[in-house]
Length: 422
Ligand SMILES: Cc1cc2nc3c(=O)[nH]c(=O)nc-3n(C[C@H](O)[C@H](O)[C@H](O)COP(=O)(O)OP(=O)(O)OC[C@H]3O[C@@H](n4cnc5c(N)ncnc54)[C@H](O)[C@@H]3O)c2cc1C
Image (cartoon, rainbow, N blue to C red):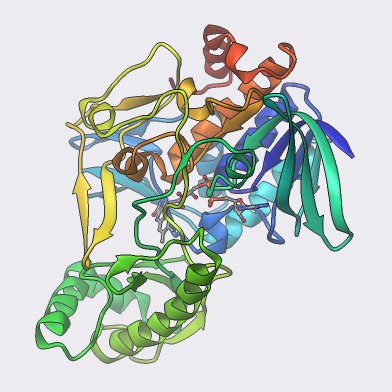
């Protein structure tokens, strides 16, 4: 099999990249190791879409456009998302994870030029000169070769960039967390008590030491199905340090530890939180939620100052105003906000490896420092990056696959015509 553009990973980044490239006329292969699309949003039950909005006081507006905005609006129109909901100094869009699985299926099915392979994992690649000539994938049919001209690594973990030998940074990382569903919750009672009650109960439990809670904060997010919430209160560590989810043994530990935490957290909520006394764990997710593993060290490494000072770039591809949200020390989470109304841009160079000529790396494994990634990793920003990566890949096809030769003003102009906000 061969394709013009090969996208590894069907998360929010990969789906947007594949759709954008196909809409621009490329034959695309999209590989996803699970049986559904959506990445962390679906596989790890991430219950809110962040990074979509800019907030100035009470005024909330979209900060990303294009297909990210279309995604948000379609979910809302189907009753599968509501908001924007003000949260801290920004705003989020709570959504139902399974709704996104269907929406992404529909989008990809409509694109005749996309060959989607689910249950298919990247497991290697061949380099010729400074380019990837083909990748190896493994699925029920065995190990196969897939030849392409341009490649997009949207695996979250930078699997293709790593296999291709691009420089990567794998440390430090943030704590992973396992979100899970609870059912038979009296949601009205729980919401009336609110997250402030939950916070007081957590503080109290940590002070008394009667529950060994993994985190000093957290939330429950109603899914809009009667009696059902997603609980987001976990934090998985080894001897106090974040688990490295790019390490197979540590990842195995994280999955088991996450499920143990779900039992403990459910017991705590049932005993303490109004509305939860009759609740039960409906299920744990397909995969523990991984915030960060490998990050590309690319042509430009987005940094903390860029984020907090609202840096702008000539080769910008999208905007973000999400705070630096670090789940990294002890039990607490820190949030460092940009000034109200301010945003930073992500440069195209932060998607480009130094060493590999026909590879774009987008999403949470972009080229960013530890702290900058803690802002840029959220789904709205990843979707915008994905759309830009897809268009850039098609422009690179005209340059023999050389992603570094893409005319960034042309890229920006196409993105703007598609409704993207740069
Ligand atoms: C616990 C937790 C809470 C979060 N909370 C929020 C939140 O509230 N709001 C928000 O917007 N963001 C949140 N995030 C962040 C956000 O979900 C992710 O950063 C975002 O989904 C990253 O998108 P991505 O497409 O880059 O990667 P991912 O979502 O990780 O998608 C990568 C995809 O690639 C696939 N894949 C990986 N390796 C391979 C391979 N070798 N072969 C084939 N397929 C592969 C994966 O199965 C996956 O589908 C949270 C993350 C976590 C872990």
